[in-house]
Image (tube, one colour):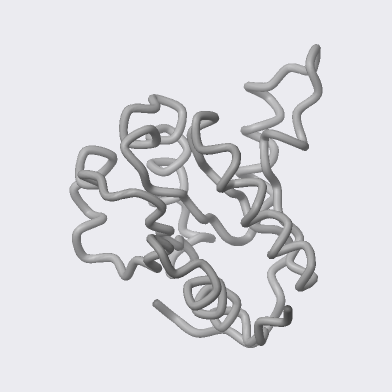
Length: 141
């Protein structure tokens, strides 16, 4: 995974709504370290056109992170978001895989087998440190 020293303008966080507890914890860590993140749990309002908002966020964000779990592998929306990111030249080298639970991520895309993954299973602080290091940020407690 390429290492950067510039803070992203905004990171799109793709996840299954069934993994929202982990997603919110990660969002809080990123926000505490000054990493702007788009997350459907806080960025989509009830009556808003969620489909259009997701599309606008995908066009606007300059990084893409996906939480990998059995739930996300089954999610048609996670797959759509990930495939969009993998096909977007702006995001080349800026797609980050975050392993939350053991899963068969190749079901989302066969190309993920060659991608570096940050493993959060049982090591949240260490994995958070690895993720923040992508942007040249040190983990603070």
